[in-house]
Image (cartoon, rainbow, N blue to C red):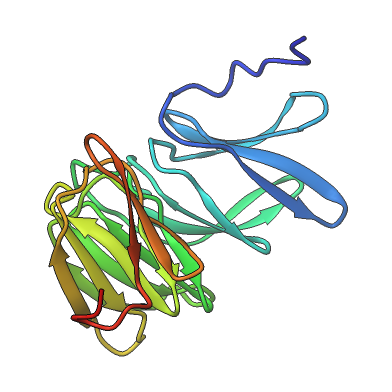
Length: 210
């Protein structure tokens, strides 16, 4: 049976994430107007902080990075604790689309959402680069130190260098995927949800080799 329900958490697009620190575990959810931390045993709300939206929060250690539909929050990072979340930095953004989930890699936060590609140093909030792009709703993935994302409503698959100094596109191919599902990489193979099938691509293959 159902153990508990928490009615402070509303919305239907993002996923919950688990944070554990100093012997305490919290389930953190993106509500329509806030990020809500819930006790996983009792279901009680422990704390809330403004923001929220359709994007899923991403956690690394005691860091949480979010991409909020709240224009005053935008792309933001927080220090997590058992009694609350303290905002470390934010980049307010006014784009219409805010569904893409950021990724954390090698002490940096990366976003391929709204109309931008962004790289921000996690500890300082220093923006390394920001590039105008035609993003989709889906979220990126990191594989072999490279950022892989869909653009142009899922028609193009792009590979971006995670170099901190400058934004650099390493490759692009027309793939005709969908705009919502996100790519997945396992053992050098890329899996993508298409309109009428699931496709797998070998990223290890050399160009021109089948």
